[in-house]
Image (cartoon, rainbow, N blue to C red; front, side, top):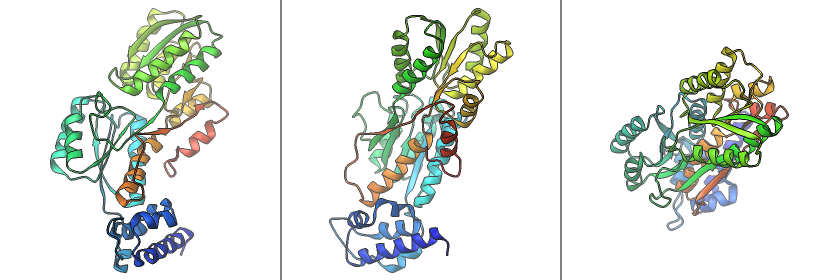
Length: 364
């Protein structure tokens, strides 16, 4: 028996001991720790335990069943974007550790496609949990409302689903400060440029609250550097082809561009391709957001100056971990907002950021 199996076996025995004394799920988790939920065997035992209102003993036969038996719906903007693809992988990996089955809806970076597929999912299946990033605020309110009415515990991530907070009975909102991403990376770029020069901003979708906040942070940083002149700000919509096309036009129009700030790194790398094709390598300081591996490598080799780690694994992991804890009765109250943190990535911390988002770990 390896160490991991030994730990799971000991945890399962402890859970059965307390369950046999008639303790509730919440009481057992409080005594042993939330970490036991990650062992599928233990999760199945806890799933069979009674609620706080009706404590009962659990049959030892449940220890042989794997998984909590919960069903989860996951969706984000679209798997064509590397950040979204990494998030799906993280959600599925952590759900697997808890014995949760995930059905996935690919938003394809298209609000109508995401809406149509969520309509189908809400009509066809009963889900215990859902982790959702809306392509655009307001476009998927009705299918999400239907999911909630059917008993699904819904966590929204990164982008607000409904135009007004409180319009939907959401469990919590998992997000990282996009304002800080925009402000910190833009400030680093402007400082490196010596506070003088021309700058271009390439934004995400107009109706995406995270993109709106990055833009607000960028603008506040720009105000602090009056020597920086904004030449253009356009919506790239997370689309690498659109971002590259925009930058091809900028490079033809503007002979001097000191800084390019992009709302995500996929667009930043597309902009770099346009810069290289124009023969202007090294002329433009580039910054982005997400710090996916290709962008971190670009920071290490000097092609990009900075990016901010937007932790897709943590954003997509939390709806699983928190949702299971709620379903198991381990927690009674969840804050309205769960804050994820991530650093500005430079050469000093790049290796750590790369390691912690390895596919076998997916922790940061």
